[in-house]
Amino acid sequence: MSFSAAFLWRRGLPRLLANTKQLKVRIRASLQRCRNRGESHAPSGAAWHAKKRMTHFFHIDDLSRQRAGKNKLYLEFLRVPAMSAGVYVLPKGGADPQKPHREDEMYYVIRGRAHIRIGSDHAEVRAGSVIFVEAELEHRFYDIQEELEVLVFFAPAEQE
Image 1 (cartoon, rainbow, N blue to C red):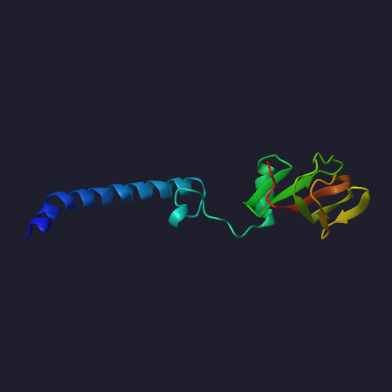
Image 2 (cartoon, rainbow, N blue to C red; image 1 turned 135 degrees about the horizontal axis):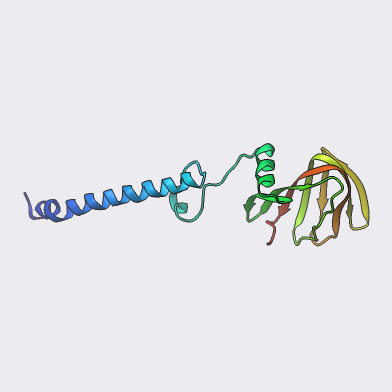
């Protein structure tokens, strides 16, 4: 056995094996933390420690349940630098508390009936309505005749 092989065998290999075991333990612990947070698996590559894996598919029923479970009018479910998206629900006869945003905004009405005022324009909206609101423009839903559920898209992502 050469000097380097003997050295590796006596000193390096046991340390390498110990480090490998420690790494496996750390990976298992990280995967378990991801499972505990409800993620399907840990992020990969350079994003391993930076952020969770991006979700690409959503279902409105799941988003509605999440929003209702948090007892909030609005649930943001997507945020990337170019845009953000959420579900917004206003009860029948309720008031719309929102203020103008710094971002352009698009609404898609999933269900319900109401009116909307955008600047000096007024319109009735119902399931299937698509509404665009420029950044900084005063707008509000009113005369909410049936619980109103809308998808909201901000571009760029809404500033908090």
